[in-house]
Image 1 (spheres, one colour):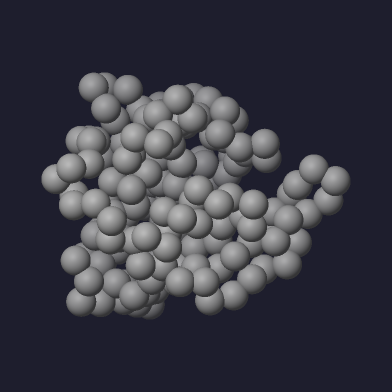
Image 2 (spheres, one colour):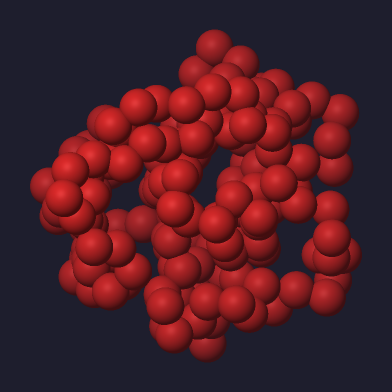
Length: 159
């Protein structure tokens, strides 16, 4: 891992609420050309996925959605508002998700990332993730579909 947690910016994590969805959707739409819909986030809240918002000085700067079952965690969405990117927030959020999943008994964390998202790949690899597969035509993209790389990280025994 590249940076000690103490050198990263402070973010307050809390459970996402339905009242947060407007702010979450603004970030999602600013960050992605093919954003999740309000319905997807509402469904994630409804089914009990771990949905978190991360605040800095009362402003939501990012969010995460993940699930844990049968010893495995799956990170479904991790996003930092574009104007707050490259400040260490994504790393801090990822570490919080990893710690929460570890506490819930997950020994491995899986995620998908766009083949073209080199910044996210660099973050995940620097935090101990390894590419374990590929999902062909997984994401919508301009002119067709884009592959996803599947990453995994062992959580058991890690700090």
